[in-house]
Image (cartoon, rainbow, N blue to C red):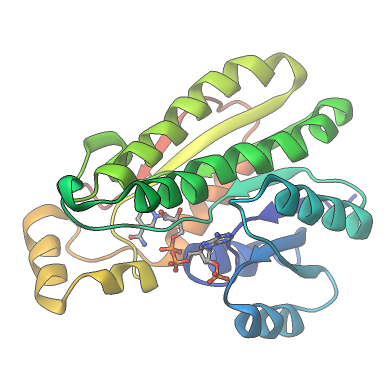
Length: 237
Ligand code: NDP
């Protein structure tokens, strides 16, 4: 039986790399929000086993509808990757309550909504895997990224707690803490800032490719005896 993977934020960056790597081996349902054209092109390129679904992860009902559409197409969901996320740079004292809420809503609430939507199926199937894309900043904290760091630390807490809760039912829950990955999210930094980050902080001397993070996500999704873990994919950062 071909397993089904559900990836939030699969239209670009790390999510797109997970979609590409999983296609063929899995049925793939992925969500997109603003990048409709890219998502449709990706779906066309990868063929019938891949389904792009419009979804705003800030909305519980939008996420539930997306999961329902994936199940209607593929029958069940075996793997969930909570990947959709945004960053926000700036001093905490300058941050508005709305900006704080948006970071939390996308990065943390969205993961809760998707997890809540897929878990009943996984529990009744007697197995499944959830992979949460956290961040090195969720472990270390980053100056001028307090909300982002808090949301990503929250994902690690969710991972550890839920792993214990659902392990008896055969569901694994793990997190990945990527370092700096070459995606649109890095465009917040100038070229000089990226060079300084690499030379000062990354022993392997370069950014990660999205595919390198995608490989780690599928590794965790397929591993039967790792749960509650946070895997750093950060070049030694
Ligand atoms: P990108 O900015 O390249 O892509 C972000 C993805 O999230 C897009 O697919 C976007 O969809 C989706 N998204 C944004 N807002 C929403 C929303 N409201 N509802 C649904 N989907 C939404 O980011 P990356 O690929 O770099 O990041 C992916 C994950 O990895 C994030 O959680 C990020 O925090 C994490 N990460 C990234 C690092 C990096 O250096 N790049 C480092 C550590 C962690 P659309 O375009 O369709 O709107």
